[in-house]
Length: 206
Length: 98
Image (cartoon, rainbow over all chains, first blue to last red; front, side, top):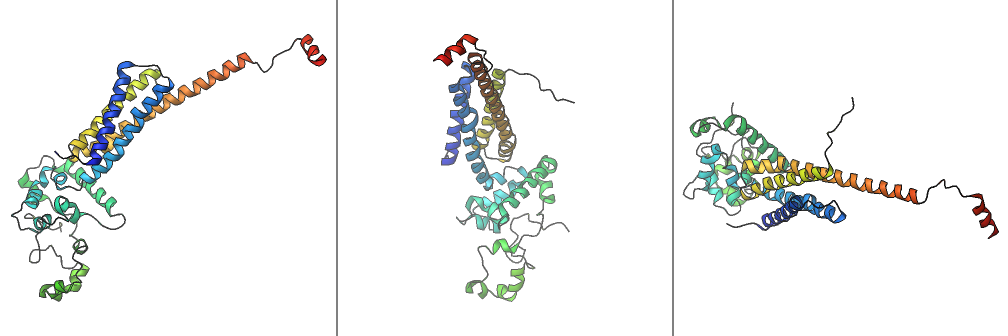
């Protein structure tokens, strides 16, 4: 099991803090200046270190495909995405080291100045929906019911595929509908173009 | 209506704060070792809330202890050197002569 350096920092802070706090609980010393300083580290500074590094590690963990797949209704999507023999759009992007194990986040994140915050807010909505509606739903039922909230934005694809390279425009289907690709009226991820992105993709509800 | 908080001794409050710290640390460590939805959400919300509560309790006890010590020091200084000290008339005379 490989441990990230920041995870190690967070765990070390937690262990030191726990040792100090347990020592205090077992020995019950008088509240002298030394005890106050010791508890400042045990209750304040080291737990703060764990929380700060833990937050960063946690936010990074939320970008991982395994994190998305920890809700059972997402399993078919993440399994297909991680399948090297799958040729769906998601799987093909997962094979690219630039996306790798964070391919769900790379394609479904909002970009821009407040993109990360908007993405996390959307993620909170997913957690709420999962907890309240999908938690006990069977996979078969979930496949029928789960759908993307709004149409997938071509602007996300255009972060990498700028649509300005000669090679891109040399493809007849690209050249003929280039303005519609750029303004998003034709989706890159639609069936017949490069989609569907997942084997069970459905558009937003009408 | 005046809100009355239950009286808990400083030592007990600190022990509760220490136990709360251990609980919050456990939740945060759980999220580090198993970074899935439930542990991460719990660590970032409940875990950090419990940790903050523990630190506030610790801060409150230390603040009260420091103010109590300051007050006790001030009281002892006043006992040693009372401001309205009355000198006997003879001693004043002696000062003037010197």
